[in-house]
Image (cartoon, rainbow, N blue to C red; front, side, top):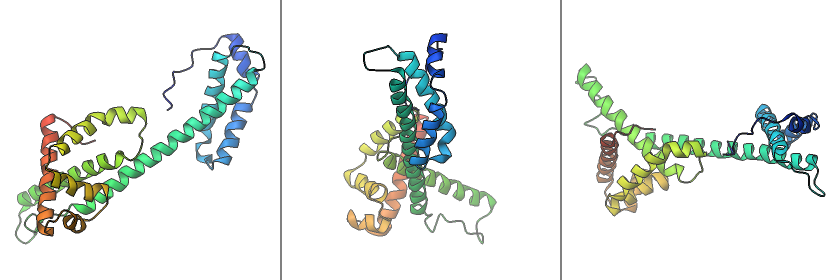
Amino acid sequence: MSGKKPVPPLTPERQALVDSLGRFPEEEAARIAVARHAGYLLDELQSAARLGAARAAATYAPMDGATFADLAKCHIRGACHDLLRHEVRQQNYHRAAEMASHHACSQVTPLPEEAVDPRTDDEVSSKQKLGSYVKAKLSAITLAFWLESEKTEPDPETAALLKPFFTAMRADVGELRPSDQELLRCVYAEGMDLREAAAQVNLAYPTAKVRHRKLLSRLRESFEKRGMEHP
């Protein structure tokens, strides 16, 4: 959650310090939950508070003017606020990913010649067209996901998991022509539709539509060659 090391087992003397706090960790966590409108996180906050109390006991060294209760309050409140900050980051991160995916899906529509026509397409050709369409849509989602994730802060574990994907995407996009990079930026970073993006980069809309699909296909093929799966 916060990247801190786990608390080692406490000695009986250190555990006695935690016990001296009574119900304060749970009560403080409940107070913070009410103040921050985070009642749905009460159990997690109380667990964080107990962990904060244990960390305070593990690190406590008597000093002039500093009691264990004072140190424990700081650790308990810090642990609760760390959890709340983490929750906000995750909500923002996943909301951005969902918005990006929705945006990407709305951008990718099959060309007339690629759309399934039940009057003329048999089962095999229909499946081929649908499969191609789904792959293009997945590419759009992953591209938008990458662009949007740059605006948020995933937790360290998720960031480490996605880092190879982000690095590869940056490298691939960086090799595109400046006009193609600008087209993708307009669509995914600026939230324009393809007509607006086409006007921004001085392309006819049909040309921009074809180029957009080709760019997504090129990026998807690059990932497949790298042996990378869509996140």
